[in-house]
Amino acid sequence: MELRIENVSKVYRGGVSGLCDFSLTLGPGVLGLVGPNGAGKSTLMRILATVTQSTEGRVVWDGADIARQPNNLRTVLGYLPQDFGVYPHLNAVEFLEYLAALKGLDGRAARERIDGLLQMLNLTDVCRRPLGGYSGGMKQRVGIAQALLNDPQLLIVDEPTAGLDPEERVRFRNLLSELGGERIVILSTHIVSDVEAAATEIAILNQGRLIWHSVPEELLRAVEGKVWEWVVPSEDLIDVKGRCLVSGTVRRGDGVHVRLIAQTPPDPDVRALSPTLEDAYLYRLSLRREEAER
Image 1 (cartoon, rainbow, N blue to C red):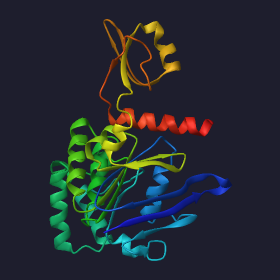
Image 2: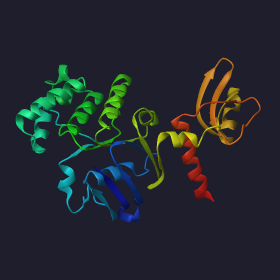
Image 3: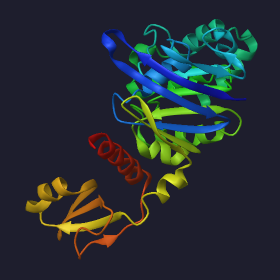
């Protein structure tokens, strides 16, 4: 089981670039795909899901070019797009049965699979209610269920935890971790904590380009010894943000506790902190911006 993305670029009308010379090879596991809004994550997801084609380069699934032989991938693909929609007058069971038929699943096997997914995603009690009355988080769970209907070998989920409450988000992270042991899972998100909890590999996109791909531990090592806490008065916060890369602030009785990333301590009173994946992600983006400005 292998997915190869070879020098893929996507140029839209007007010469707008969505992806530029993107290459990556993936095997079983969970890839966390992160980057700022507009970085090209959704463009890449749509290409991998055979919804759109690249302008240059190719994507190869187990030896087959998906642009020339899309059905080789589509039969084993599960896809949750960012703009997932439902038929409001159908209930969850009817909707999933309809999608199972489109995927060519056997009727009896589909019903068993749907029952299991409804239970897994905590939808059993509401599965006969029209989808139009579902909350955003409930619709998102139905979207996750449809992506898993055919027990896919390649699962692509674009911003899957949008609208989920904290308990649902933790449940879904655990589910992704379990699924990644026997298939390729691509999790595209701007929520770094989701990636930190589930990903075995991380890829960072910025302005359509791949700027980092490695295991989480290597990304964290790159920022080791560069994360600090600095307690400053509220009136100094704007100045600190102007001089330092700040990843978080907490206001307390003794002042604002600023979490920042710097090569050397910005003040004698700072204390060193253990880095998080979000620190490492922000640091990597800042290095890229500095390189672009040179």
